[in-house]
Length: 98
Image 1 (cartoon, rainbow, N blue to C red):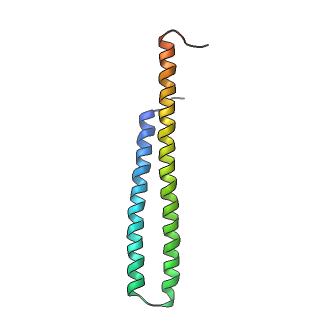
Image 2 (image 1 turned 120 degrees about the horizontal axis):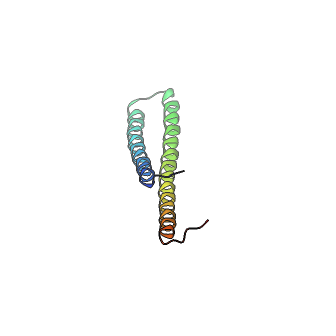
Image 3 (image 1 turned 90 degrees about the vertical axis):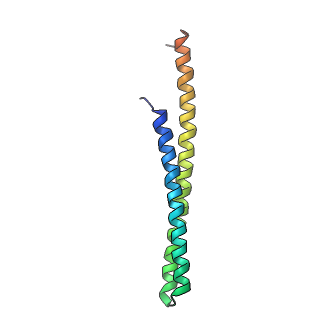
């Protein structure tokens, strides 16, 4: 099974970008919630803000997961790359194992 280290690094970078996009969405949602609280009075506002807060929490969790996954992909890609280079250098020197 071949592993494309560059593709893995690209996917990790994509995850970091997705996390940044989620952060931007969170800021927009926070702004909307604050505007709602300032400009609308009613019993239903507390239900709406509670739902928004739940969505904000989910965005935080997903952002964290994406960042962690991206870091793990990078770490593992680097480790695999080093392992592959070491193995290649070993076979180049005639020290391949069987």
